[in-house]
Structures are given as structure tokens and as C-alpha cells.
Length: 375
Image (cartoon, rainbow, N blue to C red; front, top):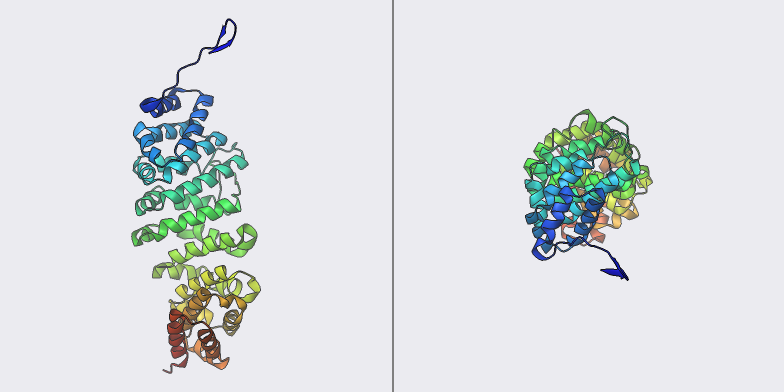
């Protein structure tokens, strides 16, 4: 290329056509940091077209990217760019399958949750957000959930939570509310795909660490992450409570009291979406007799009645889950006696009359029958 009379700039020829991606992979392997960064940015744009993900996998992009991640373990600006490429790869089924099947891909990603002590917290938080979205894509299929569980992702997510540590040296880095909400969604996906995944998650979601994290999240989740965060937490707890032994653990950890005293009452000021999820979790826990006994307290039953009479009960979901909770709690003799004394049945009947919903009608009939039951 001629710049001026007598001056010529030599250019290194770039690969094109069928040699384009193999050329990029070679530059990822042997190029300097600047050259690798340019290739990574090009791949991020390249993989926005899903058909090209297969071409990238076939050319060996995934192992080359993983080598770059390991070589740049403390440069989270660079890691952020690489994770952007892997996020785009994981949007496609071929990319997800390749990441799941690679012997060290998920282990390498998990290690990124524990950066070196001298890492910039802002860079770490930004990279973690992209990593969370990547893992959500990986966990869209049961195989991805199983592989993530095997690589200890749930335990790692709890460790980087508000009560855990975030660096290998033990220096805490508080994750952003948005990032923590994303990680809750990842946990929810991991444990909700199959019953086997739920059972396998027990070891990682059990013990003092998980209960401490959950207790911290319960203290004032609105301050920590807003309603999206609370919904993510309730989704995780709902999935976890699908097994009876898990329900017993949550009851013992104080979740029934939190739901009854903090989440469901009118004073909470939470939206119908959060209240509906809270009612659903309460109903799930009240399958167990100890939870029914906790809810038999008159003050808690009064809160339940007021919550069903509140405007948030305009939601069909709130009424559905609320009626399920009423049905189960009314199985306790003391609770049933008090609920009849305050005419709880009239609230159920009024809501069922206003809402012409088949599920609500059936749930109301069963709840009223349980309230009228005599031993």
C-alpha cells in the first residue's frame, strides 16, 4: 500500500475464507496480548450469528479461549472480553454442548469466581455478571445443570454471596445486586431441571454456609437487591422445597416465620408478584406439620387474613397460592378453630365469588370444606 511517493507500508496478510477461523485460533495461541484481544473482540461479533458457532467450535476456538483465560487469570478486563465470546457461544446449542463436554471448561469458569487478591473489584463484578449470564445459558439443558453441579458451582455461588468471601486470599468483594440476582437464577435453573439434580444439590445447599447465606438474604432483601432479588431467592427456595427433607430444613431455619411475619403481611409493601411467590413457598412448607404449628399463632393468622383482603389479592396468582396455604394450615386443629372464630371462610368465599377462575373455585371449595371439617 503506497502512502506517499517512495514510501511503502508492508502489511501482514490476513487469513480469509476457510482459513479465517483457524487463523484466528492460531493468533490466540501464539499472538501477544494486544493481538489476542483484537481476535477476542472479533470473535464476539462473529458468534452473534449462531451458524458460525459451529464453525468456531470445529476450528478449536473453545480450547484456545480457555488457554487465554488461564493465562490472563488476573486481568479481568481481558477476562470480561473472553467471557463475552463464551456467552455468545453458549446461546447456541452447539456451543453449550461443547462447553459441557470439554473436560476443563466449567472448572475454569468456576475458578474465575475466586480472583487473586490484587484484582480490581469493579472489574471482577463486571466479569462475574457476564459469567452469570453465560451459566444461565449453559443450564438451559439438564446436562448443563448436572455438569455445573459436578463442578461445584452452587457452593461457589454461595461463597461469593454476602456472607462469603470472594477472593482466594479471603478478602471479601461484595457482589452487585444485579449480579447476585443473576446467580440466584442460575441456582434456580440448576436445581429445578430434574429431581436427580435437586437431590444432588442437597450437599451443596446444606449445612451452615447455605443457611447463613439464606438468613442474611432474609434480613432485609429489599435493601440488598430489590424485588427482582427477592423473586430470585423465592424461586430458589421453592425449587429446593420440592423434597420433604428439604422442607423440614427450611422450616427449621426459620423461613416460615420470615414468610408469615415479613414477606406476606401488608406492611411489607411488596408487589403482587413477590407476594404470590411468598404464598406459594408458604403453602409448600405447610405440607409439613411443624410449619402448620408455627402458622397456628393468632397474630400470624390475622396477618394472613389481612393480606388476602389487601389489594395485592387482586392477582389471580396471589389468590391461588393463598387458598392453597389456607387449606393446608386449616388442617391444624388450633389454626382451624381460630380461623373459624374470625370468619376466615367469608374472605375465601368473597374472593372466589369475585374471581371467576376454575382453579380458584376448586381451591376455595377445598379450603372451605377443610375449615368446616369436624373430627
